[in-house]
Length: 344
Image (cartoon, rainbow, N blue to C red; front, side, top):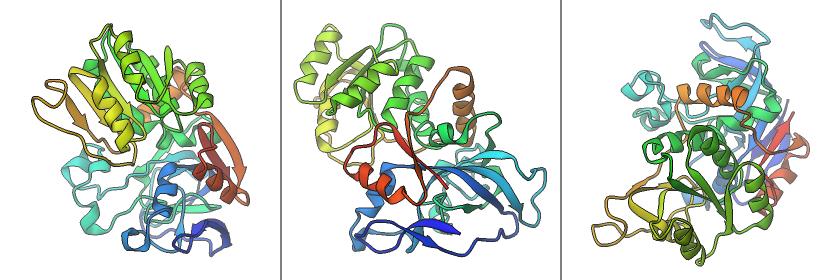
């Protein structure tokens, strides 16, 4: 079968022919119908050799959808041909967090060497993929897999981040979304669907700010130091209740920190890193900084239900598997609007 693999540190991913995998006991093989391209993939492919901890070669793709193609021994109550989405942050299935469906916070995954697809385990950028357990499959029903596959991360991750701050997103509140890319433009839609808060979007790209307006942001401003005064003026000097930072580098973290109001949340969702001052006299009083990761299995079901009932959707650019390297090249150049989706 064809697969897109990262094979050499520092090189672009390649389309190669590999053996079609067979499901082992408890596993499920999917015929892949869609796979999402994510900045996390670009991030891991930018790591130097001393910091790279994933498999090589690595079949990419942690956002996946497909039809059930073959069942391993012991798998029951799952019909062949069923259209499903793949829940990506796999866990052990036995610890306390996993028992709640919060496998994104599995306490045994590192010890047991459990890796998400495309981030250690073979991913969805292939004609077929193996899913380690049927519990990691969520029925898509009548949802188009190409239009909705990215909700498994680009929808689930902001949804989980927003749920952690729902109590602060009340009527009269204001929130800021920094970075209106693959996850950020979905976050704007989720915030409008789930809360009465006023949504402000910041980005360095005018094109992405236009997209933010199209999907529901009430205000958009360039992501630059002057945005602090602009947003504070918008909130009558009080600052914002919640900042959702989908970049999370030092510049955006400083920007968000300067906008916070007392008892606000600064939610760092992007894969960047930086340093923020903490303490009673270093920022807004009783404010909190959180770094949520992905989301739970029940939350993925909720996100897909929102896609059915509230029109949550991902702006997509579609590529064939043969053209998938170009999708990653455009992602690296920050030229993707919304999300790129690969259809084998």
